[in-house]
Image (tube, rainbow, N blue to C red; front, side):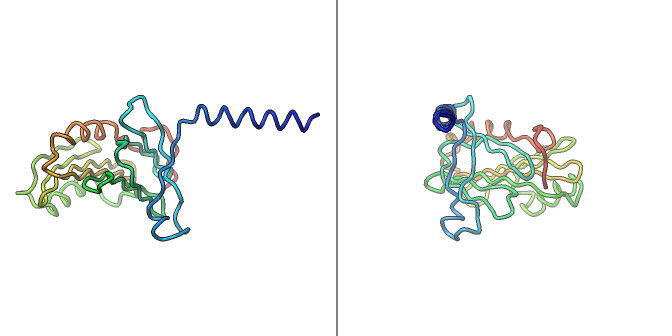
Length: 190
C-alpha cells in the first residue's frame, strides 16, 4: 500500500515537473565534438520574452538573454561562460566571467588599443563597465564588460554588417539584460 502511494506520488510529481518545466537544455557542441570531458548540455531558462532564453552562469553568476535563434551552444570545461551561435553560424554571443587582475580603465584602454582607435564606432564607460562597438571585415562587434571587486564579466556579440537592421534591436535587448554576477543575487563560485 505504502509502495503504491509512493509510486503514484512519484508519477504525479514527474508530470508536474514536465508540465511546469521552465528550463531547456541545448546540446553542448564541445561535448558532441570532443567527448565526455565536457558537460553534455547548457541549461537555459524561459523568459517572459518569447524571443529569448536566459542564461545564468553557474560559476560567475552573471546572466544574459540569449536569442532563441542561437541554437548552437559551446560550454567550456571550466564553466566560465559560453558561446551561442545562430543556426548558420553568421552571428554569435560570447559571454564569460573571470577574476579581474586589472582595474576597469586598464581593460578599457587595452581593448581600444587592441581594436585600433580608428576602427571604433562607439565607446562609453561608467563606474564599473565599458562598451565598445567596432567593425572588423564584414562583421560588427559589440562588447560590454563589467569589472568590480576582483571579478570581470564580459559579453561580445558579433554579427554581419549586411544584417545590421536585423541584429541592432537584438543587441540592445541582450546588452540591457546582461547583468554581472554581483548584481544578480546568485552566488558567485569563481
